[in-house]
Image (cartoon, rainbow, N blue to C red; front, side, top):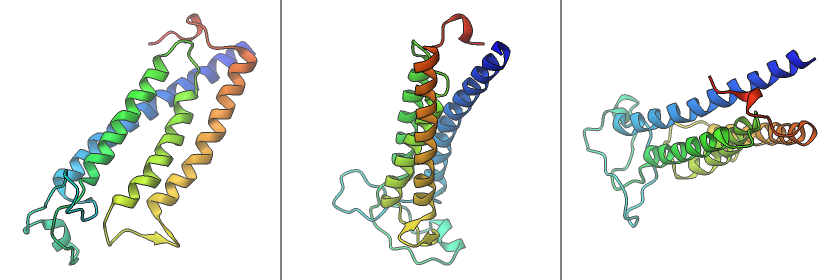
Length: 173
C-alpha cells in the first residue's frame, strides 16, 4: 500500500537524519576526549603535527599505566576531523537531488566502518581490548562494512525500481 511505502520512506529518512546527527555528535565527543586525555595516538616524534601531554596527565595515573611521554599523534582530533568530514558528506547526500532515502545511512555504516578500522592503527592505548589480531574498535568497524553494503544495495535497488524520490513525497520538516 502507498501509506506503508510512505511510512518506510519516512523511517529511512529518520534513520538518515539520526546517523548524520550521531556522526556530528561523535566528532564533538572526540574533541572532548582530546581535552580530557582519555584517548591518544601513537608516539610520532618525526611527525610535524603532534601533541605532548603534560607529565601530570591524570588518566594514565588513575589506571596505574606506564605510558611513555613524548610527541604523539593527536588521535582524537584526527578522528574528529574524519567524523566532521563524514557528517558533511552525509548531509550533502541527504540534501541532494534526487533524494534517495536510506543512502546516507548506508554510507554512514560503510564510511564509519572504514574510518574506525583504519584510525585504530594510530591509537595507542594499552588498556584497549584486543581480540585476535584486531582491537574491538577494528572488529566493530569490520562489522559496520557489510551492514553498510547491504543497506547500500537495498537503497540503490529501491531507487532502480521506484525511481528517485520526488520533492513532494520527501518534503523536509
